[in-house]
Image (cartoon, rainbow, N blue to C red; front, top):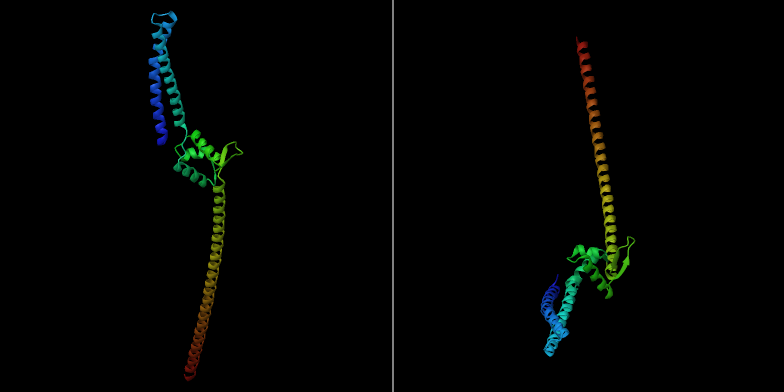
Length: 225
């Protein structure tokens, strides 16, 4: 409830109290004056004047009662302030330009009736139009917000596509670098195995030459004996 609604409710209470007080005072006096007129009291002129005066007071009480009722009804109406309008637009933007009274009631302090009234007023002002969904609920569409939401969705989709493409390129480049590194490691491994094989063959040749030399020396010693 905003300040304007609070003032209207206080006004309704004051007017209602005055109406009740005037009616409470005037009704018995008016009834007495009517009774004096009916029975033909001696002071007929005074009874008529008193009856007219009390009738005026009663009419004033009824008038104040009607004003109190109008003020009470006005206090229930929603005053669309700039803050409330901005809040409704923000909720509609978050819902991609389409919103219902339930969405506003959940996002603000308004009840369902007040939220529906706000949307109806905004529709009358030309800011939105209402549609009925397949579920039967009434929804309000803000064309400007819906178009901007679509544009943002398209931009987001393009950004995600570019991100996926760049990620795929980075992944492929990473796989290529890993493949080159693996091939380089394989070449180094083969070269290492080849070097080790050559060294092993050289050691075997040296070993055979040493064994052959020892055999020749042994045979020479036998001949000398």
